[in-house]
Length: 422
Image (cartoon, rainbow, N blue to C red; front, side, top):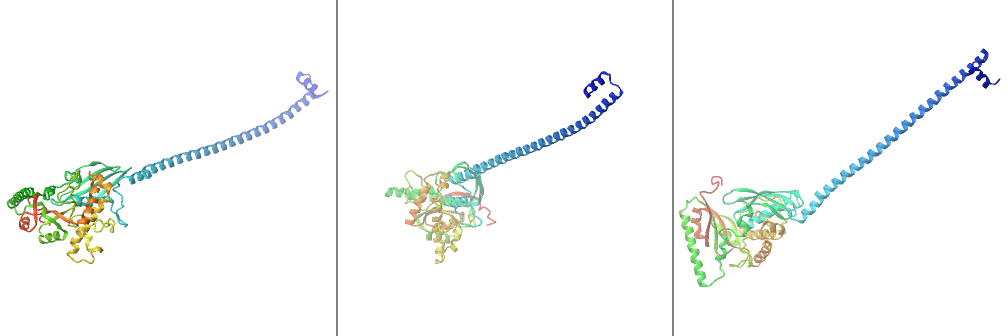
């Protein structure tokens, strides 16, 4: 009997005890094999599953790292692009725009030294000394770039008569003034004239007929008499600002001698002849007045200078060490320095066209400076009149010895400012 028939008999319940034992032993053996196989398969499946999970986790981590790396690159690249754009737009491009227009913070005029004064500092000193009798550009200027040709600047003006000093603020945008009040923008500056000297044309009238000359002389004499009468009525300690127009133009030597002869009078500005007497600079332009302050202590000086070869004696105080005057003795050295100093500042402003066009309200002013240079080169540096400060007593004691044609009192104070401290 084969095992298949034997097993059928066992299932049908027909097997004897011996046959049952054979079948049950066989079942036991199969169960043991099955258990063994089952454990082996489960182990392999579990190990395979763990391996799959581990591999998946590793792949996931690699993917995360790759994604994070790419994100970091994108973020860093974006930041670098933004920074580059900022630098390019707000620094590189802004600096290009700054170079196109007037830049008050530039130091193109200063000597090559550790400290360099900004151009605006020299611009103001030259402009005020030439064009604003009785004032000085005092203390240092302030200039701050706002980018793209925009600046905030300030400067200080000192009234040499009252000794008051005031700071003024100006905003500049691409070569144009966007905010400016008073200071060098006062009425006197805008119209190119100054009280007292605006009558200079009448001193040398175009009409030289005998009748016109007689009328003018009578008018001037009458005004002078009133001025002298007023001086006599003032308290002797009254402090006066006066413009004096001379009978004829004086050389710098003649002016120096008058100044030395009257030490109690303070000569604050010397008007220089730059056009033929009695005519305007041009038919379409008002009379322009330029001059210089012969007192080198009235304005501060920087430790550097604009190009000394191009602008010798830009600061009058340098006359003692100026090589061009080393073979000249006093007092010749002093009055020779007046003409050199005046010409240097005139030349300086002639070359600062962007500044002059913006601050002067007159686009023809640099042309005037150029013509003025030609005139003094041909006729010399001569003065037609001066601005003088002093007490009423000082003027009355000196006026008869000054070759004046006309006198104009500009301002009067009860006493000299800081009289006990000077």
